[in-house]
Image 1 (tube, rainbow, N blue to C red):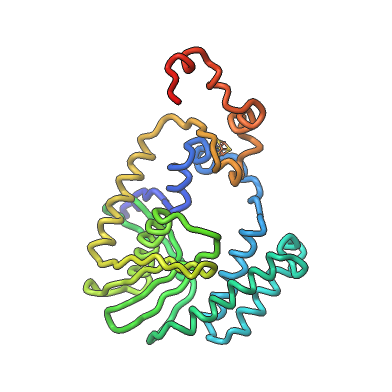
Image 2 (cartoon, rainbow, N blue to C red):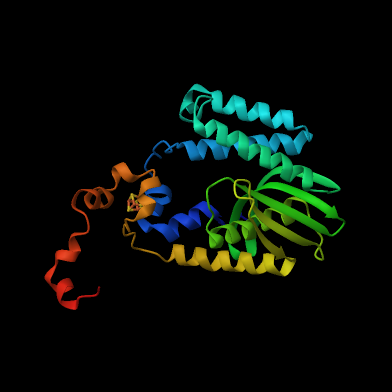
Length: 266
Ligand code: SF4
């Protein structure tokens, strides 16, 4: 029997890490070091809680199921920073109330929550993983997928790229016919803003081809420099990153270098 070909496993998070800071990518996927515990924040707990609530709402259609899930999640002792006595708990409930209105505004033949799978593309040597928060069949060849957002604002390019990858999951898991088209929504339940992509099978092929070329770039990379910046605030590896810690202690000392003064870039 022929051995299975090696497929490079890739996710949106992995690609983002590579874009953001090569050293962070190295820590996470190459070094073999044990992952540090994630840095939980009130915002991340609110986001997780609302996503769980929206999943239950999608599954049963009864807002009480999502409300109960949200309350249970934020009442967990380990989530006390966003617990019932806090402003974050109130905010989470407001965001979920917007989610209920969003749910009620969607008319579809069938709906599905939390589609999550690997999409292997053997001819391209990659295996892509992503997740769809909610999918709706609007008609036989017309679908909608939603990526719920709960932050104060979203970065458009990140949302677009997440939607393009989520599109692969929807086409794969629901076995969409070639002619099916998909409206992909990044729907912010806090601001009400929607980011919309209209996607076809051809777009899915181009997305896979782009990911394949991105992966080739990763595979050809030999240097993993640290690029400290705002992302360090949320980086799980910060405590082990000498460059980030050094920057925190000394500030940007290259501004004092003679050569830099002479070139006077600012
Ligand atoms: S702390 Fe900053 S510089 Fe260090 S790995 Fe993380 S993102 Fe990169």
